[in-house]
Amino acid sequence: MAVVIRLRQEGQKGRPVFRIVAADQRFPKEGRFLEILGTYDPQQGAKKASVKLDRVNAWIAQGAKPSPTVKSLIKHATASA
Image 1 (cartoon, helix red, strand yellow):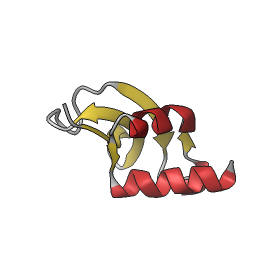
Image 2: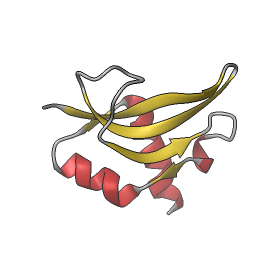
Image 3: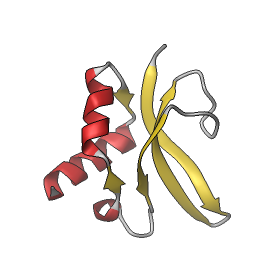
Image 4: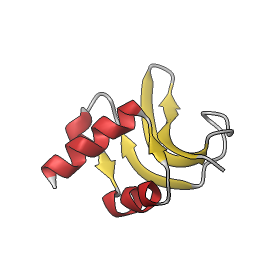
């Protein structure tokens, strides 16, 4: 099972809010996931994203691959922590 850390879109039409989730790569983008790792509101900016860094690092240690967008959110979160 290849695990990826990616964004899952939620929110209203015209006002998206994203959750950072760990999911099997075969699951649909808006479908099932394994764990919620944080949230991201694009209107607030990357600096306001909440990321559970301890859980993200645990998934990466187990072989999960973050998407490019999530990788940048993790970078911002570690810089501000």
